Length: 205
Image (cartoon, rainbow, N blue to C red):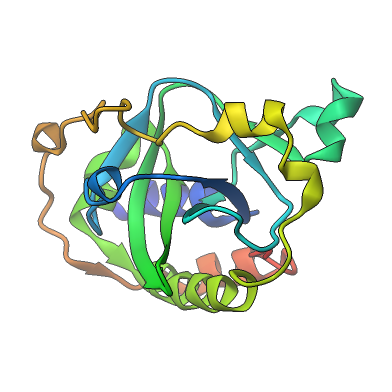
């Protein structure tokens, strides 16, 4: 992949990046299936919210995405829970797994399917930066009062499933299929970072 294509991928992935939340109760067996740097794919739609409060459960997905669709324009009820959705067969890179006080946050970056080789083979300075922000967010929010609108039966049914695997912990995507590129670390060019930072705030917690 040449530099121009890499720049295009980064612009599409990181420009307008927003953080979304999805809390559930997961067993340690399922949590252990996630590994930092892993690429996962979710077969179904990924339901998440922009409303971030305290955890009533033991597990949080923090999902960084520039591709979420706000359903409130189509369904007024969706606005009550801040309902954002990603299309089926969405791909994610596991950026971080953070355990604090028997609670766990897995931080996922939503990536384009055509760029999974790139994101599997390399890390970027942007990823390093937002991981720290994600950890700070988790520490500040984990013991707050949960958002009551998110603790209704319908929302909990939508978000109770693990992302990227079935209830038995079988992953939907095999990382061995990914072609390894000869890249370890990418420092994004100044113009890419400036393009991202013009969208204030370019990450939202």
